[in-house]
Length: 106
Image (cartoon, rainbow, N blue to C red; front, top):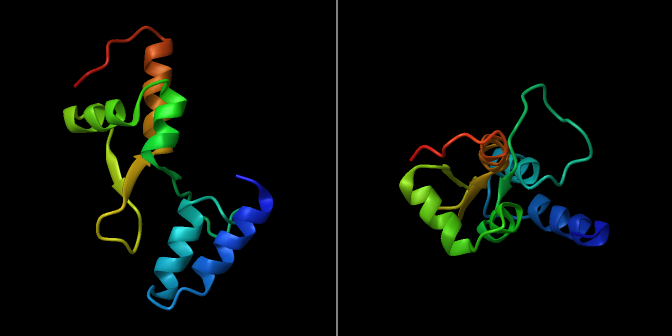
């Protein structure tokens, strides 16, 4: 995304009254809208299924099927009951294992 879009998203999440301050902070960090590290604990970015599909060269439905089979784990967006995605580390792990020629374990 472009910088103005990210800045606007951050402003919306910062001022969202429906979320607790901790939920807002976690959501902003998960979406990668922070400028540098704010805490010592690393947090994994949550990708939506379209972005995960783009990185894997598959369709969004294919990514959902990989998650259903247990190849990659779904992750819920903080503060939401239904919104989910895929951890960026899971996508990177899958790409590395395929790159090394390992079989994908379901």
